[in-house]
Image 1 (tube, one colour):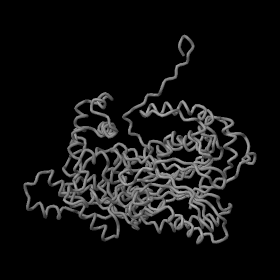
Image 2 (cartoon, rainbow over the protein chains, first blue to last red; image 1 turned 90 degrees about the vertical axis):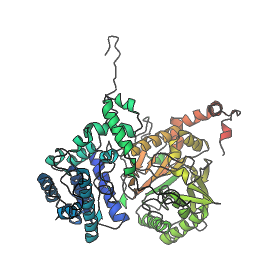
Image 3 (cartoon, chains in turn red, cyan; image 1 turned 30 degrees about the vertical axis):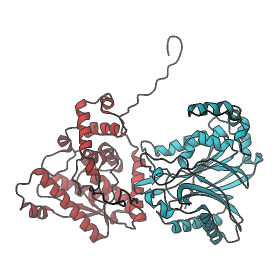
Image 4 (cartoon, chains in turn brown, red; image 1 turned 90 degrees about the horizontal axis):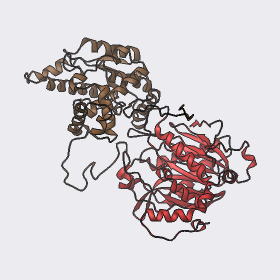
Length: 286
Length: 333
């Protein structure tokens, strides 16, 4: 109230950088998505999920168990000899809580069988071989169980290009692909993923001791808010004006722009007026 | 199909809903059934069977068979069909014949003539449209109107104008209970389009729609809330009934958020279906409410009084030079 007697109504502080979700709504939406994409569209009731011990795959296991029933979900643990013991244990915890099938396939022999011929492969190359080997396992087990591999990649890592092309991104359906990592954390807490999995530092666990945020050079909390503004059409200066360091904005900006190719199918030389997905256009569910 | 939840107490935008039942209103009473459905992608024959199943469900429902059965946008094919538009498109007359056959199979002679609103991809002389038809199905089916969508969303996840042509007119048309008009999805987001329909005499506006759910920061998708607000304002401003039929089901990851609803001419939400799942929404309306609402809030009459000046302003805004249009001249009746 001012001295002149006028009550003053102030707008609540609004944040343009908010990436909050309503977890109950998103949970319901994604469970319906899984049922419709698998059962209604494809007539398949069985899901195969690679459960790494991290929050993304834990959340997908929880969602698949709810959507399809735990008896119809195979959680596959695929350790390599250098994988953290904690990851294996956390993955087992997810299987135990969700009551999905627990399948263990050690990929060491398969990965080392190839790397024997490439002994000088860099850690990045070794990580890519492991990621692609895991997809070979998931697709093959899907054929064995008459199921469908379900992806676990989130929107943050997709946008930052922080994944192995034709590995993590290859399952035909993915419930998390439009959720930022911080939104995955919100949803994971809501569905009951154990705190020790949600709160531990995110890691691809391809190299011992690595964490996503150290690799990326920025925290997910900051990256997600910058990504959200960027995708909504704000320029770098406008994003920085929201309170972000220019270095962080630039880092995110450059990573996104350097990795558009990773979010597409292979580039095909167009030579006809009927090129697939250029002229001949049919939706994925047609 | 799940039973729709009716909102218990309608409330208008301006608190103008009289405390009475529709028994006081003297206009024709119309029984509506909005069929919120998830088509099978690209399979026109299967979707016609699904429509037939809806007719059969209505025949066995405890309420009387509806006067009008309303289906969403692109009910015969699903919404996102891209280049396959040419494969799923039908002539309007063909669709009416197929609907009449479905009605006969589902209802036989036990049900009298009734009307339908159906969204479909239309082919006419090699041109393709996103259309909705209004037909009376009986011994001799009558195609009363075809509306071709004018506002073709071609942004974000939408790409309509790449595959279909724009419609060019908004008309109201005679129906057994009065006058009606159709606008398809984004058409109805533009208040000017609703205004034209109302000025042409529509008392009931049908809005077949396909709205992918997005914006998940609240208890319902943001587009559901937006649509409810937009349509309530449209109904209250013009004193018309708005009947919105939303598609449901996932199409390539995009979940259609049904939330079919009927809104009264006071802007009062009469009933709304859930935003997920196939549902039939049943609502009885009394067109006498249109008269009552317009008497309480004569916004449409005020608009007509100012239409001449507004038309001139619009013409100047669009760079044209046309003489002012008389208010009554805009009405076709």
